[in-house]
Image (tube, rainbow, N blue to C red):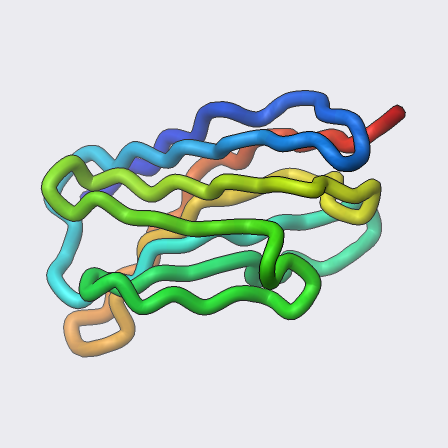
Length: 118
């Protein structure tokens, strides 16, 4: 079993920055993809950024060039550096750890609020 604990959310002004941290406890399954998803009020949850255990990252078009995801396999952490924040980045951000090959696993954190407001 893996538990994911997010931290670092809060309030930022447009153009500002925030860093989100996710700490995984337990044994992270090999070949897991870790990432960040977000859900804005009234909208479906969407992928923000993911990173494989080998360091290959993927980003939503809306955050490309502004957000950077990084992962430390030894410490079981994944970090999301968010720069040039926009109002549209407001939402609850969730950390996810997913293994898509057998045996598949899928773990989510509780979520953390990010609010971009002037």
